[in-house]
Figure 1 (cartoon, rainbow, N blue to C red):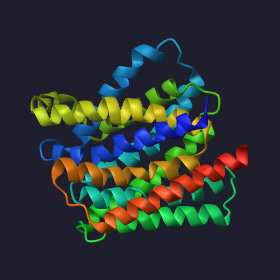
Figure 2: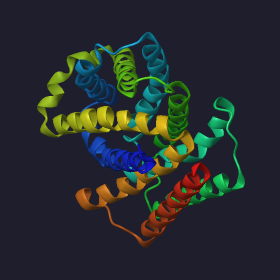
Figure 3: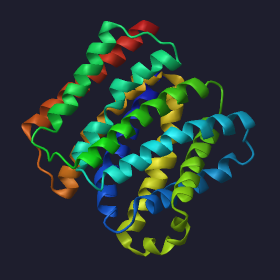
Figure 4: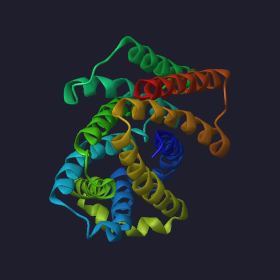
Amino acid sequence: MNRRVYYGGLVFVAVIWGSTFPIIKNALLFIDPFSFLFLRFAIAAAVIFPFIVKKMTRKDAVYGSIVGIPLFLGYVTQTIGLKYTSPSMSGLITGLYVVLTPVISIFILKTGMDLTKIFLTVAAFVGMGLMTVNSASGEILGNALTVVTAIAYALQIVLTEKYLVDGDPLVFTFFQLLVVAVLSLLFDPSSAGKMYLMENHYVLFAVLFNAVFGSTLAIWIMSIAVKNTNAYISALILILEPVFAVLVSTFFFGFPVTSWMLAGGAIILISMVLAINRENRKRS
């Protein structure tokens, strides 16, 4: 399949994940983080289960479960962090994974890190920084938790490239989702008894949107794309996530657009396009 299809898939994932920041932020006014995560990922895993029940292998189960651990760490710290910081600041700090992914790849995947990669990675991060000029600083706790999110997401992307070499992306995704649901329940066993919280229409929307689109579909597409590209290029495309977080926050939740945001978004787009073109030239 043409690699542009995978790049397009990653852009779609960035759109979905970017839109979840303000949605989750508002949902947390009515539901606690662990209950939200349990409901979200239990539903997401249930959606996939009928399609993979006859395709499960021990290898996919083990590797998918391993990768599910940093995924859980990333989601729980990001969700709790959103209670204490703004969606735009959370998006910026989460985007640190674009810097951390190639660094972690050096140790786990034994990949190189040349000057061009370093330049494009730093440029993309500078773009994220510009997008949040004049944003609320947020609480120290929320920002600190979101730094852990960035580390966990970078590790999850790298481990996906390492373990999903010849496995089934959908089965691999199922076990990641299942691990997040189970660990969320273990950390707060009362979550299983809070289905009544979904009687709130906004919570119902937030849980279902994040379960079907933000978890099942997005993580499955990301797994396929990482398998057929690499962790570095995937992370660089996914840095569009905070761009879309700002856009959704602006058009649907009333956050203002500044010239800094436009400049930062332009730098991110240019960095991403240059990185993709460079990767394509290397493979042609």
